[in-house]
Image 1 (cartoon, rainbow, N blue to C red):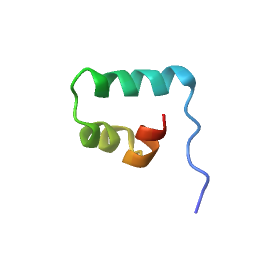
Image 2: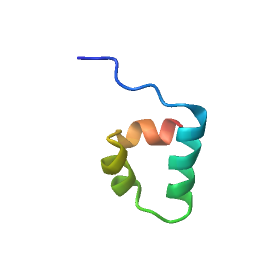
Image 3: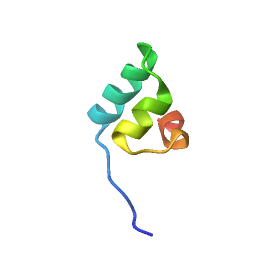
Length: 42
């Protein structure tokens, strides 16, 4: 299994802010191909 993608701080902030603004976390995770666990660690 590969290491995966490295996300910049700006990218992480953008994704997390989308979730805080009301977009579904599961939709975001599917869109950006990340696990929900990773999203919540950010």
